[in-house]
Image 1 (cartoon, rainbow, N blue to C red):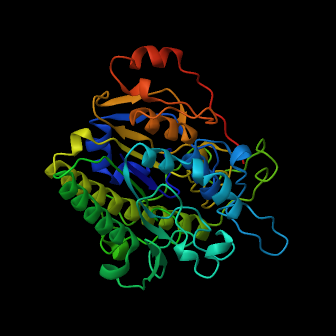
Image 2 (tube, rainbow, N blue to C red; image 1 turned 30 degrees about the horizontal axis):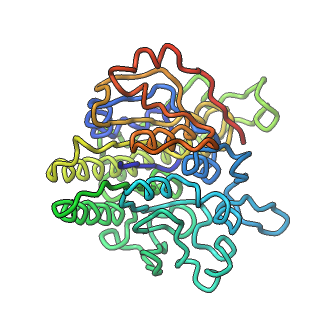
Length: 395
C-alpha cells in the first residue's frame, strides 16, 4: 500500500494539469473519483479523520493549533490524541496485520513540538513516534520546503536551504526510494507487505517549487506560461450576496492582489509537477522490483484550495467546494482500469478501504465505509447503484 498525500491541493481548479504520471499511470490504470471530498477543509482536522476513519466530533481535533494566549487548543496532536486516538489509527491495524510501515513527511501540524507530545517526551519531542509505524521520518510542525527539522526514527535531523541537500520533497523521494529498495531486498528472503505513507509539502505555502519547474523570468515550465492565470471561475473576484456571513459582501481584490493570486497558482503547479516526477520514479522502482502490479496506490490531498473565488485571494477553511473537493486516484490489483466514478467518497472512507484490502476486520467505531466494492469489476456497477450519495463535512 502506497498512500501519497499532498497539502492544500484543489480538484476544481485544474491542479492536476502538470501531473501526467498521476493522470495516466494511476488514473489511466485505475480509478479517478469525480466526487472526492474531505470531511474538514483544513489540514490537521482533515488528517485526523484520514488517519482514524472518524469525524472531528469523534477525534476531538478542532483546528490546526496548539493553545496560544486565549486561543483554544485544537488537539492537533496532543497527549490526549496520543492516548485516545493513535492506538486505534490506521497504521496500528496494518502493523497488526503484518505490514512493515513507514510514515514520511508532514503528519499533523503540531507534530514534534513541545506540548504536543506525551509528558515522557517533553525533554525531546522528536523521540515521540506514533504507534504502528515500523519506520518514521516525520516533519516537525507544518509544511516547509527548506529550513525544517524532522524526526528520523526518533532522532532530530535539521535541514537548511540547499536544494540538493534540503528541498523537502526531494528528501522524501530519496527516503522512499531507500525504503522500497530495502523492502525489495528483504522480500527476496521472506515476504512482508509494506505500507508507505507520504505527506508532501506541495502545494502548501510558501509555494516554493524546485528550480526549473515554474515559469519564472518569462520562461515556461510544464506547459504553464509565465503569464498564465488562476482559473477564472464564474465566482472569481465576485462579490457574494448570498454567502454565509464571513464572505457576504466580501470586498473585491485589487489588481495587485489578483496578480499575487495568479503567481501563487503558477508556483503551486511547480511544486506539484515535482511531486508527479517523484511519483513516476517511485512507480518505476516498484515496477523494476515486480511490486507495482500488487501495490495499491492511493493519491489525495488533505483539503482543497481557493484562488480568487468570492474575492478570496488564496486559502482553504471555507465550506465551499473549492476547499472541500480534492483529487482522488486509486490504482490497485484486480481493480477497474481507466474509469471515472461519480460515487462520492471522503477521507473517513480511506481507513476502512485500506483495511478491507488488507483483510483486516473493520472496527465498529469507524465513521467511514469501505469503497473497495466500487473499485472491483465484479461489484463496481452494483455498488455504484446502491452507494449512499451523502457526504458529511464540518468545520
